[in-house]
Length: 319
Image 1: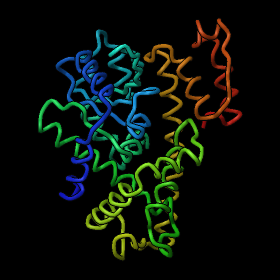
Image 2: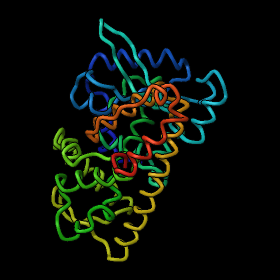
Image 3: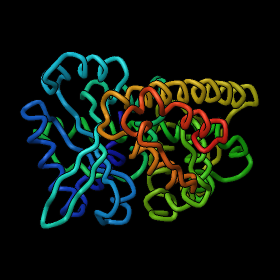
């Protein structure tokens, strides 16, 4: 459970402004998923830039997967390997808006931000800024605030594994966050350049410094991480054995994350409209390599697209 101060800070951030295009897309998503829609979260690069160029990123939180899909197959996939991810296009004000939409149940979201969850993706994403564009009730809003605060605590709780020299050097925001983002992206199937990772921190250094300190205080109160010192000068208190255990746990978590990401990529073939074109756009954006698909690979990516994916993996374009 987050402290009142951390929860209030998260609640304030979730209510901050977002581009009007994001609200327009949130309305579309609420209509699409109907009464089962509990909340819509907006995050990612378009939020950082406060514009709608590119693809806007959303998480839709729902009550039950069976309520939102016409058949059982998609509900089954969402339940065993959450989230399902969809691509959405919507015209508003003469502009074509694009969105990537991940769907999670409220229960899965609460589990996915906790330290025991096998994959880092959800708690790593929501350690970054987000906006709650829709919530069905104040009770749901409060639950989302708690879960996003938990994501921050889960993220910062990996400090002993990611920054073991924090026993000797202060745990400053400018040291912690770029190192932490690098580690979480290494646990996924795609890479990020250090310039992109540094840009995540540079976009909101004051925000990251404040939340780092609040999360460290909370973790120290709970006994999850031992910390000494004052704000901005906090140091890790841990033995060599404790640090080594933390690093081993993170290495296992990183391997699990890559396996989970691989399965998720395979699942997107069934859930993500035009996944081949979108996937190549992402690869080109993050890796800088221009890739052409044959007409046969575009029409039948499930059958003929895997040689391209395998080549990218061997070249470490996807990581």
